[in-house]
Structure formats: structure tokens, C-alpha cells
Amino acid sequence: MLQRLRSSSFRQLCLVDQCIKQQRGQAGEVAPFVEMPGPRRIPLLGMLNDVMHLGKPAELHLRISKYHELYGDLVRLQIGTQNAVFVRDPNLMRKTFQLEGMYPRHPLPESWTYFNKKHDYQRGLFFMDGKEWLQSRQIFNKPMLKDFHWMEEPIRGTCAATVRHMEQGCDSVGTFGGIEAFLYQWSVEVVLSVMLGSAFTECQQSADFRRLVQQFSAVVYDIFRCSSELMNIPPAIADRLNVQPWQQFEKVVPETIRLATAIIEFGIANNQTRDGLLDLMVQKLDKPLMMRIFIDFIIAAGDTTAFATVWSLYLLANNSSMQATVRQDVTDSSTLECATVKGVVRETLRLYPVAPFIGRFIENESIFGEYALPKDTLVLLSLYSAGRDERFFTEPETFNPYRWQRSNAATSGRIGSTPSASLPFAIGARSCIGQKIAQLQMHYLISMILTKFHLTLAEAEQQETIKPILKMITVPNAPVKLCFKPIHKRS
Image (cartoon, rainbow, N blue to C red):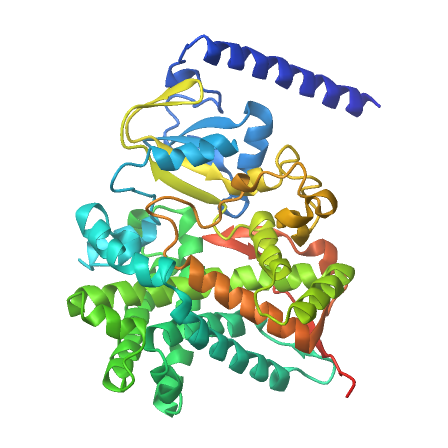
């Protein structure tokens, strides 16, 4: 009872505070940046403030969610010397992309930027800025985001082959071992099928090519593990102290680049069909730049899409009645991209956004809500917090793929939902260049799996024990163990 009264009082205080802020905004008043609420920084502690404020890197999403509950939709933090704002309000989240300028800049993993500078290594789109980024990005926008239907056939073929391997890889009770690593390789193969077109199938006939892909998938999997361990210590200090994660990182990154280069070179040498993205880009980019961009594509694609798919399969396995409903919709639609499967992916990324924070540096001094933001402030979208806020989504902790369907709003749970509170691919000029590939491959694979298998958790306790943690991206705190039980259809 006491807890309920406290909660009610807290909500009333929040409503009063919100009314005051609205009145202030209507009066045209803009508060200085220093008045934005947030945890107090203690003088003389320096970097220890960051440790105290941000907590464990693996639990940053939870720490920021607590700050939003304490301070509201805008939370001011100073991270090192950088002014930062975490935003949970959907309208301000969208406004962030209006303030990013002509050449949007985003925060980069310190371990990568330090490595690139130390070894004078040039990277692809993710690490580019300014005119170089814009020119390259404009070349890729049309085939990857606008006229993207040419990608459907190679992605469909790769997903079908993956499901056949799954049928062969399950043990007698349907348990599939190492699903994360398996999906990692699947995601890499999807990107390669898009790059090489129908030549990918020919390349896979070569044992050497298959070996390269397997080695690459295993090695690049290690990159993100090392990167996540380096989140606890600045890379320059890690390098100076020669700590083990940095030793591994410096060893793994060059090997990943070497294998990625070998894969692309193999594809170029054996590309007779000329119907992939690689051949299209050869005509528009110089080879060194093209190689840098494609190396980044295949490094980044595996980790993000693989774990998003793991989360989707986990949610379906953990919700058997919803799984049956989705399966029926897939069967009835006779398509691999029915609205319900699209809802599964959107709902997965709402609950478990691969990047729980998307950041942009504000190009110029700007008004943000009721506050003045200094130039170059880093604004971070709190996607994990916004996606689980009951103001934006009805029953936010419930897995409900139907909340995204416009045509069934009255019964689907869409009422009270705010789609712009979930922006997993970002929006604007620097939105995720690979979002169509990711969406297509997830839609196809999930649909194919549902028509072939009934999904369950191999260990019932994982219903409660699996939690999201951050290792550069949102991953399960333990390997998800799934059972794929074949569906025997009547003849």
C-alpha cells in the first residue's frame, strides 16, 4: 500500500513538473543546458565520475533507464569531456535527426578508432565523415534502400539453404547446438550472396571459399567479444599496459581484414554472372575504397542481424500460443513477408534493440525541448527505455507482433502505441544502410523456420533467466538453447 502511495505521489509530481515545463515552453523560455537534470558530477574525481555514473558497461541500458525514471525524458551527462544528453521522448528522438547537419556524425567505438589511428588504417562507411561519406553513401542508397528488390532472390536462396542445414544439424530431440555462431555465419553468407549475386552459389562449390567464410565468421565473432571487454578501459591505456583483450584485438582485427579481403578477391576472380552489388560498385568506386566499404559490410552484418534473429526465435519459443498464431498467418499468406512476421521483427527490435543507444552530434547550437544545446553535444536515443515505456506502448513488456498492424488497431494492441519510440535503424541521411538486407533476411528465415519447425526452449528455466546485456550490442546473458521440432504435415 505504501509503495502504491509513493508511486502515485511520484506520478503526480512528474505531471506537475511536466505542466510547468509546458508552460515554460509556451512562454517561449529556453533554459540553459546546465539546468537540464542529470546526475551530479563531483569535482576532482575526473574519469571516476564516468565509472560512477555509467556503471557496468553490460548494464548501461538499465542504468540509463533508472536515470530516465529519476530525471525525466532528457538526462544530461558529461562523459569525459563530452556533453551528452540521453533522450526518451519520441518527438525529440525524431528531432535529433533534424539537427544532425549535412554530414551526420555518430559516436564510434573507441577501440576501433584507436586501432585505425595507430595503424593508419582506412575504414568504410561507418567510419567515414564529411564529403567522402556523403559521396559514397549516395552511391549505395539507390541499390540498397530504394531499388532493393534485386536482393530478394539471393537472400531467399541463402535462407533456404540455411534451413536445410538446420534440419540436418538438430540432434534426436531437436536441440540445435551453437545457434548464435550458426546464425552468425548465415548472416555473413547473406551479405556475400548480395555482394556476389548468383556467383555466390558457384563460389560455394569451392572448398577453399567455404573454408574462408567459416574462418572469417569465427574470427569476426571474436572481434566484438574483445571490443566489449575493452569498454571497461580506454584503449590507449589498454595498449600501454598490454592487457590481454587489447592483445587479442590487435591480433584478430588484421586477421579479419585479411580473410574478408581474400573472400572478396575470390568472388571477383570467379564472378562470371556480373549481377551482384560488387560488380555494380566496381563501376562507380575505385577498388581500394570499394574494398574498405565491403569489408566493413561483412564485418558489421554478422553480429547485428544474427543476434536480432536469436532474440526473435527466443521470443517465439517463449510464447507458444503467439508462435502458433504467427505460423498460421505465414501459412495463410503464402508469402515470406506477411505483416505478422514483419511485426515479429519490429517487436523484437522494440524489446531488444541491437543498438540500445543511437547517437548523433548536434551540428549547431539548437533548442531541444525547453533547453539550449551547445554545438557538438552528443544526443543519444534511449531506444531500450523508450521501447519499454508504457506511455508509448500498451503493455510494453508483452511480446505482441500485432501492435504494429494498422488495419487491426482495435484488436491488435496498437492503440496507445507510438511507433516513433522505436527507431532501431535510425532515420535521416545516416540511417542504417543495411536495413533492407537485415529485414529481408530476418523475414525470410523466420517464415521458413516457422513452416518447418515448432520452436521451444531446451531449458524451461531460460524463460526467466535470459536477460539482455550489452557487449557492444544487445545480446543474451547466456547462450539461448532452442529446440527445433519438425512439423510433420499431413499428405
